[in-house]
Image 1 (tube, rainbow, N blue to C red):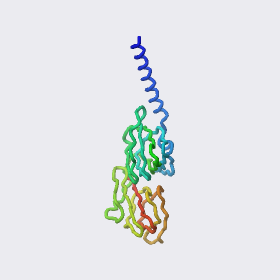
Image 2 (cartoon, helix red, strand yellow):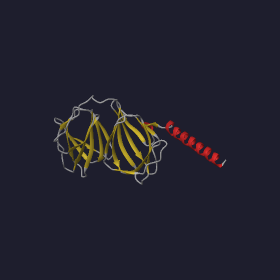
Image 3 (spheres, rainbow, N blue to C red):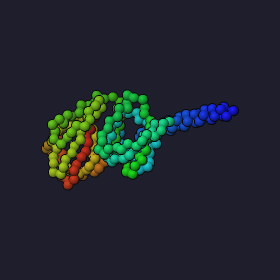
Image 4 (tube, helix red, strand yellow):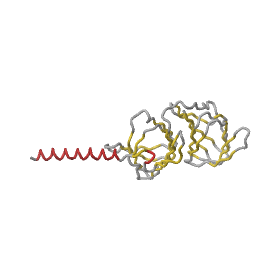
Length: 234
């Protein structure tokens, strides 16, 4: 009798576990509607998200379906959890780390991210709003001073720009639309041939949409180090 009861209890626990797993999957939301994922810009090409998860909070279960690019603005200790599975040990997200994730050619991915540390998880991401690459041809910026290529795949090409106070990056022509994401801000001037220098005060975590066709250089007119990322779409 005790064996039968134990078997029934085990079977019941298994059913409860399966029901809980199904409930987690049902209640997953699209990434654009997940807690602490704020859409801040959208056009026909991309949706930009400001992701800012406070310490000891989580994103809830949400689903990724489109290719995306992200840059970590602040470091944090983040743990991941898939529906029906245990939470993974936390991993330390590196500040200034750019990432590309190809979701479009994979099954939708549902997960929950939890901030287990004492610092905010601050990230700026953009999602592709068109399903296939091949619409644009980005610039190369090969040999352009100040720029280091950090990403080149089927969807996007990206660079890191670092300028100390008083330094000027080389000039180039942007040939595809894209996104600029600021890691460490400063006062800059954009130098466009035939136009007056245009001053800008860039701040940490800001982003800017950039149309193609402009030839420009950048000078750091501030007193702090400038570090930013620029991405051109394909």
